[in-house]
Length: 174
Image (cartoon, rainbow, N blue to C red; front, side):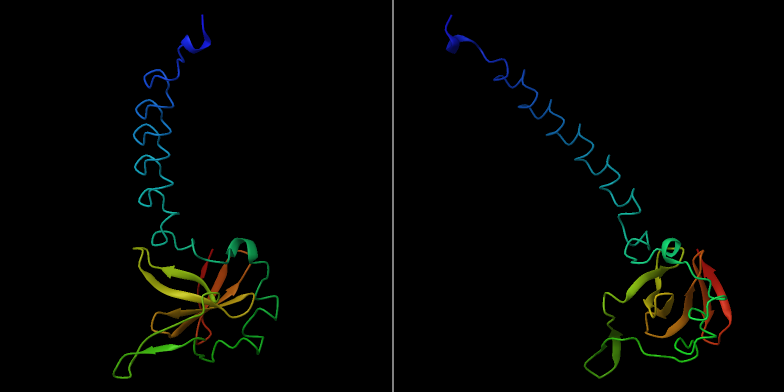
């Protein structure tokens, strides 16, 4: 028997599972859930909230309040804005960046350098309400989307304490 006369069992697409896309799950998106976004939640943002930044406000944040918060603002004078003159919650400052004007000269929006935005704050319906800008290692400034400074966030071991501009404690985040 000649070697050329031997039939290769893998030359037939019905026998070779790697040649027929109906048999090979790596080629067929119906069988392979890794290629089908309906079956793979990691590819479908409607199933995986961590993929959609509209659902997960923590996706784009550069700070982990549970990891980086090691100071108690009420014990450390460098963190407590009411003891430290360098962080003054009563002084309203402008956001660093440029204001954008329309043709009539009205301010329509503003820019903030991308490395300065720490997090976006969403309401419970998923609408963006505020954003925070890093002032110091332990202090964040919260602004609304009109560029108005609304709150001061001070780092704690559990998250952040929030203060109004009049110095009154307004809440916390964990």
